[in-house]
Amino acid sequence: MFKTASLFFALILPIMLSASGVAAADKFTLEGFFAGKSKAVGSFSAINGVKRQFTVDLIGKWNGRTLTLREDFVFKDGTRDTKTWRFVKTGPATYSGTREDVIGETKVTLQGNVARFSYLVYLDSAKQANKVRFYDKMVLRSDGTVLNTALVTKFGLPVARTVVSFEKAGAAKGKVRSR
Image (cartoon, rainbow, N blue to C red; front, side):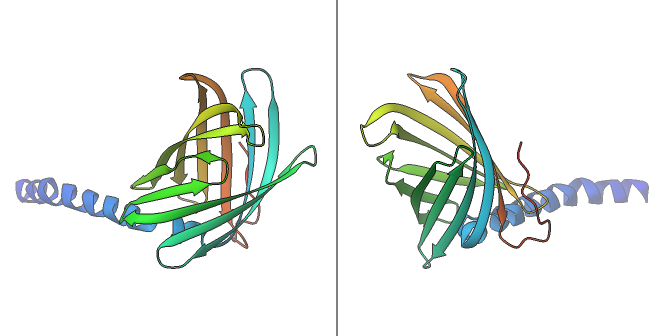
């Protein structure tokens, strides 16, 4: 009987694990998390010592194909900024994204509970100066929040890091965590 049970688990366990991976992939979509209101806290830390903390109020609108995500930033020093992402769903786990300060577009790929994307941006978009690349990794966590970590590079060298924790507005947890 032990051999039969062991054989059963040896054959069924990989199927169950792959099915749970599919469920996790179906569980995390940009429109699933960001449609409606959400909020975030985050920080930007550069190798030159610049550190900025911020909060973000987000409103996402999903029309069945495109997620329009407005981000209203308030920095600790009182500075405000607004950015708007437009993510077009191009496949079950892929998107094409644009934003007013992004050079060209980004390709977003979802795998399980993780979204990855990379894009070029001018940190001073008015002067089209200080061009850097962001490598974002968003992880849907078991508590229902999304943690976004981004490596920022210039000429291929790491120059900064951004960490942002997102939460659906009105979530039962009540408070967004900063890391």
